[in-house]
Structures are given as C-alpha cells and as structure tokens.
Image (cartoon, rainbow, N blue to C red; front, side):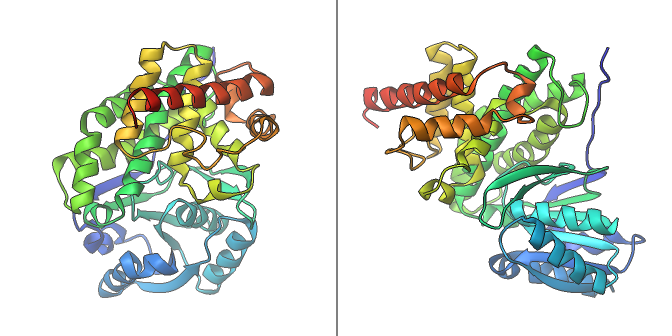
Amino acid sequence: MSERVFISPSKYVQGKNVIEKIGSYLRGIGTQTVVIADETVWNIAGHKVVSELKQANFSAKEIVFNGEASKEEIKRITQAAKNEHATIVIGVGGGKTLDTAKAVSDELDAYTVIIPTAASADAPTSALSVVYSDDGIFENYRFYNHNPNLILVDTKIIAEAPPRLLASGIADALATWVEARAVIAYGGKTMAGGITTIAAEAIAEKCEQTLFQYGHLAYESAKAKVVTPALEAIVEANTLLSGLGFESGGLAAAHAIHNGFTALEGEIHHLTHGEKVAFGTLVQLVLEKHSLAEIERYIQFYISLDLPVTLEDIKLKDATKEDILKVAKAATVEGETIHNAFNVTADEVADAIIAADQYATAYKKSYRL
C-alpha cells in the first residue's frame, strides 16, 4: 500500500492589516532579512513591509524582482541575499515573485516568509516553485524539503488588487477538487509524494464548495475594494484550501493544459495563470466524460466572473489544429501532471481541447453572451 502524505506551511495568518504585525511573527527567528518584490509591488506593499520590519529592529535589504521566475533571476537574487548574510527571505507580490523567493530561501537554507498581494493563485503555501525560461516558457517544477515557514495574507491589500486577479485565483482554486478527485480515482501520486490523505480530500472538496457559495459575493466585494466575510472566505479558499488541496490532493490535466499553452507564442501569454487553468479545467471535464449539465455548471460560473471559456477568449481564435496538437503534446510529455490521473494520448487531449471550445462557444451562443 502506498504511503499517505500531507504537507503544509508552518503558520498561515490571514486578516486585515496583518503585515503590521510581521515583526511579532518573526521575533526570535533572526534579524537579517531580504525583501523581494517587483517595481509595482514596492509601492503597494513592499515599502510597508520594510518599514514594519525596521520598526521592529530587523535589518531589511530591498531587492527588486525583474519579473521572471527563471534560473538566472534566482541565481542573481541568491547572490544578493548572500551578500547581506540573510537568514530570513521575504517574498512580497504575485506568484512568480513568491516562487523566486522560495527558491532563494532554499539556496540559503533560510526562514521563508510569503506575503501575497493578490489572491490570484494557490502557490503561496506550497513547497514548490514553477521555473520558467527568461522568455516565460515553462521549464520545470522545483521541489523543496519543506513548505514556507510563514504565510501572511493581508486582506486589506488583497481587496485593493484588481478584481480580475481574485477571479483568476478562483479559477485556479476551482481546479483543485476537479484534479484531486481524478487523482484519487486513478490512484495517482500527489505533489507531496504519496497518495491523497482523507484530510487533503476534505480540504479540496471544501475549497470548491466555498468557491461556488461565496465567489460572486467576493468578486463584487473586490470591485468595491472592501473586506467582507465573503472576501475573507474566498481569499482563504484561493490561497490556503487550494494550496493544501492541490499539493496534497494532486494535480492532473487542468494544470498540464496550462503548461502546454506555454508552447505557443502570442497574446495568450498576457493571460493570468488562473485564466488559462480555467480553460484547462473545462478540458479535463471533457476528458472525464461528464454530462453537458455538469460542464455547463462550470462554464456559467466562469462567465459570471468574466473568466475565459473559449479558445477565442484565451486569444487562440486563429489557432490551427497543428497549434492545438502542439499544446497537447506539451501537456502530455513525460512527467507532466496529466499522468497522475489519465492514460491519454496527445491526439485525445487535442480533441478534448477542441471539444471544450465547442461546448463553451455553443453555450455562449445559446444564451447570447
């Protein structure tokens, strides 16, 4: 019998203005910190984090992230952090910044602090990074011996982020149960290295329930830039529930399709991670032979959150069958997550991509959307 494995961050803290308490959460851990953020995020939250650290008598070196979670960027920032003798690495911002911070911390064997500025993906809690080339092409997953030590999610900052990012996070999180249940049914391995625990299964399922229950309310709250109970629920679902659910529950076709899209050039690269995962989730539902009613349940929910559901929506209106096959081949390479739950060929995946587009296009036409 395979081992059941469940992993998680040491501490997760979520609430309004929690970054003001960062000093108290790091007391006794060390005093030499580096704070990594991109140019935009420095004005949103980076400088605030540094200010709070200095008030609490921490040394805080500011390092500007250049935008791509690549091997070269990780190497550059690691050297800068070494020069500061940092024992605490703090990542502030979006997924690629946070993935880079985790990699740098791993190189230094440092204490890892993750501060997301949007609830746009489930990467913050995980013990892995997605590594891309300098041109933004997916290369590989990088796995770590432990999850981040501290996750600080300030919902005041999250509420002020563009609503599109919250919707993107909902799309990413909505893949959690869809993928986990497929991995469980297939008996596949999870990102944690074993089979799914009862705890992970329950978390992944609760994630989806929360999304359908509070997603619309949270999206409207984000438009108004206010923190509400619904927003708090969705931020937790997008970040903690989805993070634990995908890592210890398992990834499958939805994220493999997302990775496959990096094989193409063009405007699709301007879409968020979650927006591409949304379409990938529809493709997985097609592969699983769900009923039209079940697939349309997801299509309707995505559309209500202004998320893409067709190839045209993801900037692939003019994609050829050869382009789609290229995506499918990239999604089915050895080691891709689709193999955790499916025994399919690239041709079968390409057909599912085309079918998902057709179903969603027909749905939009029938409702004149």
